[in-house]
Image (cartoon, rainbow, N blue to C red; front, side, top):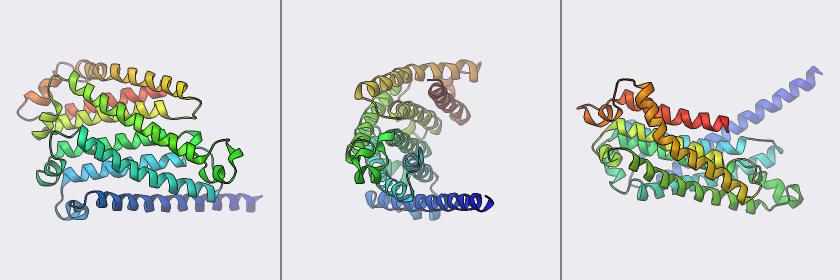
Amino acid sequence: MDSILSEIQLDSILYTLGTIFLTFIMLFLGKVVYQLCHRSVKVNQLLVIDDNVAFAYSHTGYLLGLLLAIGATLKGHSYGVASDTVDFLIYGIVSILLLNLSGWIQDHVIFSRFSLKDEIVRDRNTGVGVLQGASFVSAGLILMGAISGDDAMPFLSNYMDLSFTGRSPWWALGNTIIFWVIGQVILLLAVKFYNMITSYNIYQEIEEDNVAVGIGTAGAFIAIAILISNGISGEFVSWADTAAALLLEVVIGLILLPLSRLVCDKLLLPGQDLRHELVEQETANIGAATIEAFAYIGSALLIVWLI
């Protein structure tokens, strides 16, 4: 009995170590792809030699977003080492490609007002770095939701025997991409809405090196992505059911943003005006912005846990 338990524990330890090793391989591959997509950006030089904090926030957000996406393949049941490994590699590579594509889309839609390279690399604008890092985390959360459905896995078992789930693994992979596209569109629209409900232009403030506004907006990005991720995750039943769940999450999110801002202003920072703290002082209040970001993310998490 003891020998059997020891063998099971050893298998579990080896499986865990192997998965961690593959995860670091994927993170390294993600870094390589990032460098290929940004040839003029010298990642190692900016991080180690130039000590560029703005870029460090941005790149850390990218790696965290990638970890969230590929981590979705680790959820759920195990179907054997071979099947799990194939799933991990396939969806890991897809995550790397889609995360970089998400970054490109957001650069040309959300951050089209200014040059990210100039703001982060040349000007070392920490607010922009924080916000771009949050946009990568948001993209990673959406990918995590798109991948985490039961239909997304196991790829190898489905490929070898379609009766395993009744659907082609390519169909499941296509579903993942469709959910990613839907999530990206909703995120971009929600960010536009967030800029409308604030009493100042977030892009103008961030471009002017307002780190506090960058932090607060980053919290809004991540909160929206948490709700989108929850709406598209889980076992796929039908497009109607998925659309209904996602619509509910989006409506709640649109209500959540102004409500969370009000809660932050009146309850978490009593006696203080959030706008004054963020944009009207000579030095923007980063502490108040951090509380604002917490209010957004905390509210989103509470909603996900309760629904």
